[in-house]
Image (cartoon, rainbow, N blue to C red; front, side, top):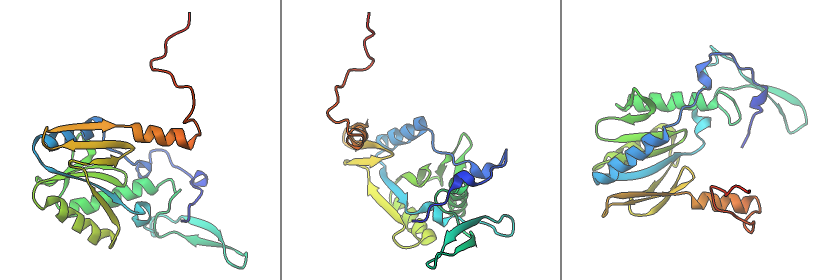
Length: 212
């Protein structure tokens, strides 16, 4: 994967393209609770290489990157699509995804631009990850549409009902029988401990007891 040095990209004050909103945690939990209480289908969807699917209007803005070719010569290329590392890529992707949702009849809620609905299906968006809640064929229809937009194999999906599903660094369990939602972060904590070599550290309870 090619990653650009976005730290060298100029940023203009007040430029909304840099913004990449994510759904509020409280709203995401409300969507989950409402879904399980109403017995709706819940799936998680992830758009592969999402930032590469955003487009740059080269007639309005020109962004150049410097690369070395196979002969060791420096060449400059003008970008037509977003790349990872580009500061504006998150905002560009959100604009592309929002436009595609609107074209499919979705509208965002006024109090959170990352919460979408078409009256049957609800979508909570966190950059390239989404929680989709619907009844009947709503989830499948939306996945087919997104696959048509971004290409075959571009959408990873996994069911979240009655299984332990990993989503946004947490493990979610939707119990459709008891109509409860359980969220745990033990998996993420274990990953952090293993990644930092702190698995065998001397742990303490929190909040810590003050000395003296």
